[in-house]
Each structure stands twice: as structure tokens, then as C-alpha cells.
Length: 101
Image (cartoon, rainbow, N blue to C red; front, side, top):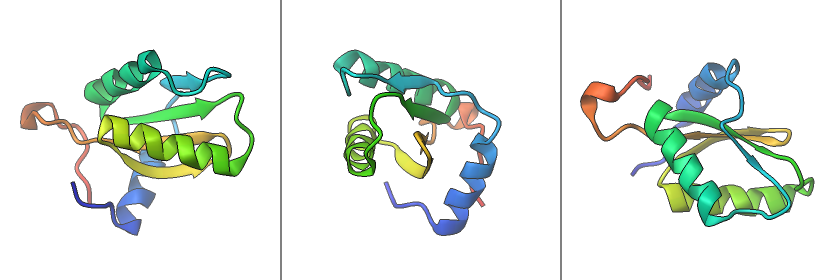
């Protein structure tokens, strides 16, 4: 899985602008159930937002974002405030919705 280019991240952030968060990270942090929920959301729509309700420190969020990306095999397209944007191309070519520039 190769890293996203800056232009691709910008494109994905633009697509994600109108999306609602698919998952919320609360005081329990990253649980197996939450990881499975994020994985399922990525499988369904390739591009999702995850909102951090309890974690206000930037370093805490950064660590959680890296753990989510590693656990789900996704790319981080960006972080805006308390919301992170994740992208993972669908393995099935027929179900791929997003074409990266």
C-alpha cells in the first residue's frame, strides 16, 4: 500500500467535506468493536470520517489515528479539528467508487 500524494489527500478531504462521521472515539479509546466498525464503514464507502469526542490533545489523537490506520489498513487523508479522514480503496474493482487523481 503506497502512501497518498499531497494532491490526492487534498482531493479526498474535499470529497469528505459533506460526510458525517461514521464512528466516534469516546472515553474508552480504540476498542476492538470500534476498530471493526471503522473497518466495516471503510469496506462500505472507502472514505469515512472519525470524530474524537474525548481526546482533545493533538498527540493523543495522532497516536490513535496511526493505530486506526494500521489496524484497518487505511490511509489518513487528513485531520481537521477533532475529525480524522480515512481512505481505503475497495478490493473489489466493481465496488470502487473513488478514483484518485
